Image (tube, rainbow, N blue to C red; front, side, top):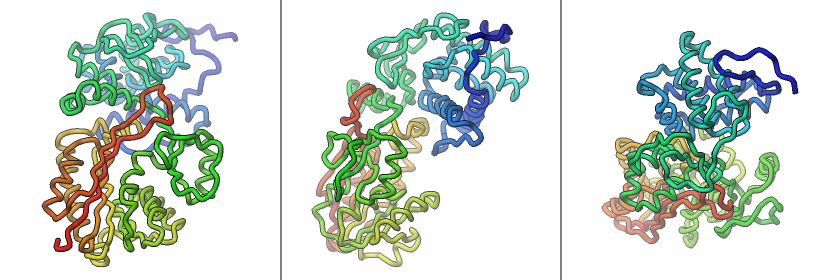
Length: 470
């Protein structure tokens, strides 16, 4: 394949023909600029890239996803090549440095000089005097990673396992990437935090509460960048397609087919749905009950609402959620499950106070059990955030108590692994007359490169009965 003779400024090599259009990188960097301006409070939801071809949109998504998943890692690597604090660099430059470094470290099919050239061109359109600075820093990152900054596709040095060395970056596929300098901190917990892109305070917290071996396993679990799609098939009324592979948790399967085929199945059937195996356990623990009226107090998009309807086929199911953005999904669940009715939160007390036999409170939480799926949640973690959520969770428990009939049951659930959001809240609920029937903490399982059938998120649930005189 012929290459143009013109050399790109400061890169030591030409731009390859057949590379994805510059629009893909420009779209990704524009998205990273918005994220850099809001970090650490990164917005939820997947970005859309209208106007790009599917190939270019896939590249834009891959760049942003790699940068978001490994933000702290990338920031530390870039910082090692800077002479000023990263946070003091203007937002367009931060976005460019993160996006360029993400391509070189985590996108194996992207030639480094192509990533650098397009990144430099983009940043010059946002900050005219920043091109040379970004070019120099990214070339330094290239040398740190490859040992050179001029080869079209130099080889990276990989190791079979992450061994906690100061020159290693663990990978989502298993193994580790070796750098050409030991830039990570000598302190073990700080090194883990940077290598796996977690806040140091969170790593130290887990190490103190879970122990170092469990914490290291958890950090590696959270590196998984494409968690398997698990389906709840416990109520399947017909045969399942061959693409539904066995899962270690009974009543669950791993989807091994295409997205299009999965969408077709979900549209055609109401007896199976996507739900992580750990998420199914809260309702399963209450399956022996016979409620007539069930209220899903924090229904979200209705996954557990659907499970409640299937588990209690003779009960009326009331679903409610304060987030109006989720209402479309929740309405779809109600339409497919004839016994589900959506009621606004403000109307619950007036209509159902003292009437519910079962209330499910799947409360907002820190999401520390589902970080492979909600990677942005790790950056928002703080003690202040935890305290705010604890207060909100207690308000929801108290609201649930008002709705319950004498002797009714509360199923309290989170996707957190933090004691304060889980066991401590069960103990607090005793002051409202609740006594725990079952308490279950499920830690995340699965490692990078491990079998999909073993993977599941972390979760917590407690089935609590309320005394008749409460």
